[in-house]
Image (cartoon, rainbow, N blue to C red; front, side, top):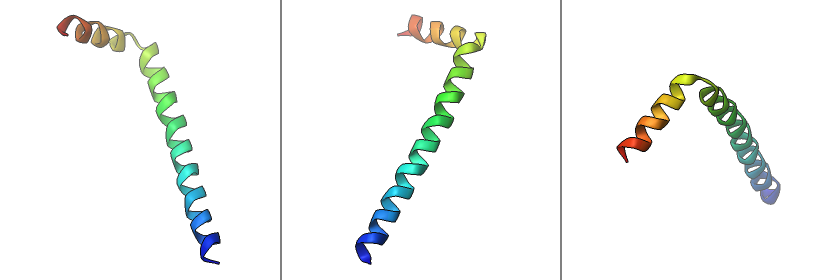
Amino acid sequence: MILLNIAKMYFNRINTLWKMDIVSNVYLENKIRSHSYWKEFTLCKLNI
């Protein structure tokens, strides 16, 4: 019973991370597509 609960918690955590990963990937893709991101990126590169 305890093992089952631990497995459930573990699975839920992985599931949440996976969902967050998809959300952040979509967000990053949208940001990369926008021109302002490339300006920021170039400026950061020049500053470093």
